[in-house]
Image (spheres, rainbow, N blue to C red):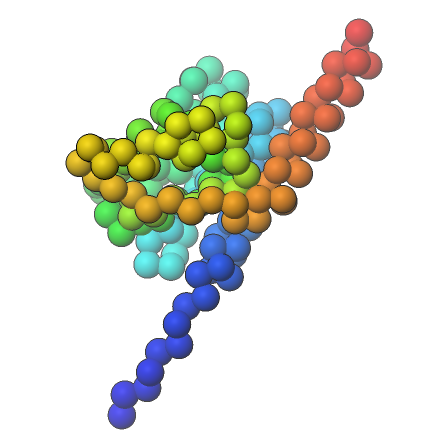
Length: 166
């Protein structure tokens, strides 16, 4: 007897994985880093996580997405990540978008838009470049308010601390 499968509610699924990315963003905040978090998902399972660490690691490439991609590639034993999705709390920058395309991700999902450096449509859209040899699906705005609020709180706290120290 064949039982028809219920369609997966992608909005609920995306929200669940974005919540996990938000937890990673809190790890960055705890270290004094800009609170951006990312998770790599394959077949509905989180295989890797990452959070911003450029300041502490003295590494301009240590963005949440790069950290998650590195971890996933090591764990899966392949620098290509076909069939994987990456969830990140902030729209990727050009560097991260390029790494995502090179990793051959199936899909990227981000939370808050980044009007200053966003490479998913806010400033440029690398994912829309048909000339590139790989196309990655892009979805934005998942839990955007929660993702944006976390960043705003972080920077407000930072400004307050700076005022107190002056």
